Image (cartoon, rainbow, N blue to C red; front, top):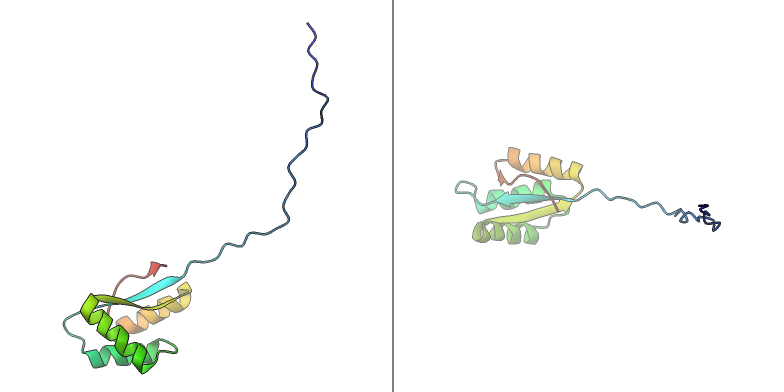
Amino acid sequence: MVTRLSTTPTIAPERSNQVTRKHYPNYKVIVLNDDFNTFQHVAECLMKYIPGMSSDQAWDLTNQIHFEGQAIVWVGPQEPAELYHQQLRRAGLTMAPLEAA
């Protein structure tokens, strides 16, 4: 018995020239409520260490930390997130571990 192979050419799928860029995840800097930092200290630390933080924003976040137990005070790339996290922790604030957004 003779078996004939298909003479239809195989066409390879067209390669895409598009490059898919993989974005690095953003990270959340989260301050937790505690029983020893004053409202004033928390607000001052947020204004000092988080770029562009206004007094009104700092006080709103401080109230959120107090009444809800925590607040996300900054979201962005990992390297600055690590810096702000470390600065706030060294200033005595109680910090949640950094987490990807």
